[in-house]
Length: 237
Image (cartoon, rainbow, N blue to C red; front, side, top):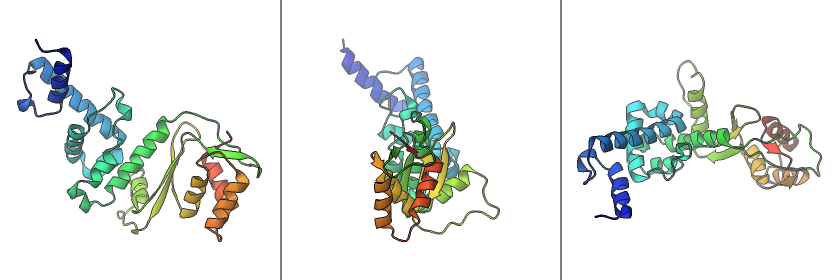
């Protein structure tokens, strides 16, 4: 009689291969379980990456999700945690050369989800003295991208402009915050991106302003700080 560990290994492997190739664990009940497991992973990815789904279409996304699941199956029964590796997976696919912004759009979908799922915290007041220490809100997510992915992402998450979308091919920054019950997404410039980096750990406001001013001498740093505080990006730890 096979031991339990060997059975479990074969069972898990059989879930990830074509049904006709499944080894000794074949039955109607197993086929139902296998199909349910696959569909659950695919739909979890579709929920986590709705903008990617919109860009490639339902049929293509399903094929991508099935292949991704085959290579990187869920490591946890909590499917809201599944999909972190999809952006990197997309960068390795030859067909994405026709959609060079797709992996970045996937990164933005994932950041939105992480902001949505993050713990609550009280945001910083709109005015903060120079010696006040500020830090990033637990729901704050931001990144800098070498494609106009944020413009594309925002257009697909809201009403598309009449006449289509033709963004300039430039670097862009993205910021996701959740000061209330819903996630806010905004396009940011390099100056605000640098200011957010300066607040990765609890830091006095005066030091944040000094660091941003040194990196961008022509920037209106107090205005940048006001914008970041107003967005809900900071807390006072």
